[in-house]
Length: 112
Length: 448
Image (cartoon, rainbow over all chains, first blue to last red):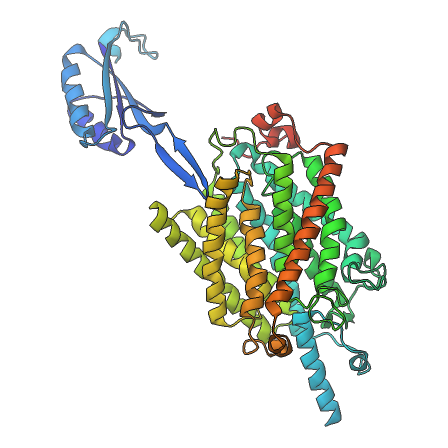
């Protein structure tokens, strides 16, 4: 099992969700987050006062998938979330030791 | 024929009194007892409510949206507190000091109307021959409420509630009531309509008394109190441009009571003031937005809102004194000059006028007083014929501006020092960081 963490542009969420559904993903966790990478922030001006906003809004997806689906999932996310412009985001893949479905106490991949 | 001409004369005088607030000659009062004109009274009671609506909740939301969310309630509380405090002062001594005359002074009124004694349904021929004295007094009260409320914009987010209340109470007594008498009182020394006045200045709805006095006082007070913690280093951006826009819309609507109501009648001058108010506000809003678009790439909501308020401020002293073209010219200046005041001048001088009370009201009020002197037109308002023909009205305006600035600056300096000595102006920086809402009012604006 692997945990895929994807940071994407908020307006791409629907497309990424649909692309993941197409490769057979049945669940995910989505969080609104803020941060910056190479895109950096932007400037807001209120009358005479100028403020630099360092943290830009992004959406973070967390999906736990069986090992054989990792490549397909990552590919689907990258394809759906890409605009080609700076700030498209990142995908991280990390190993997962265990998963438990709380309702049934199932363990491992069947719990995902 | 005689009675008809006497009646016509009285009507003209009543209309002129609306503009001028000048004292009717004694021979005019010998005619039949004054009767209330129901149309005029209906419009003036409506206008009175509209002017209160400018403060509660118009200005409160306009300012409230511009502070950070941890201070939104402090602004609302200050506006509410001022409405209560000023009303009590008005009842006790304020109306009498502004519009009485028993002292026989051009600087301050008298004692005859204290506790609003005798101020009721019968018109007061000196100021309002066709509307009840009570309506006139309440209409003027609403101006007295919004004026100190404008000042809090400069010191927002960092002045103790107790200090705001004490400051406003003293400021009304030392600055506002005398200023209102000097400019609007029948024997005020800056009332151009009074034969005895020293300075022949004109101010239709409060450019000097309301906007200059509050704006210049705001500058002095914000310099005395110093910048907000984090000023120039941290993000102190507005928390809700939506509230700000809602408040701006209410200010614009309420301003029709302020300006068109200042005709003190539902007459032609009221309509002229209504039209000019619209032209100036709309022009300034558009010009400010376009300036931003050209110079910075974005036409912002705050830019449009600032333009609306700037236009309304600058047209105030001129509302029924200028032609429609004059109003549009005023609208253009009302955007350009305050725009550079709040962007260039403020950045240059590095004072923390948090919500630009000086940049918009002080600069705009000063500009309006001057432009009134330059653009006043006898074609637009025949009552101005003598003044315009005499020439030099702009110079009289400049003199009145000078007196207003001196009264506001010196008065605020003294009151500020006194308040600082008694209760202190600022909370601790820890309290300021936490926000005034929780520490000063025990509430939070948003439970999210």
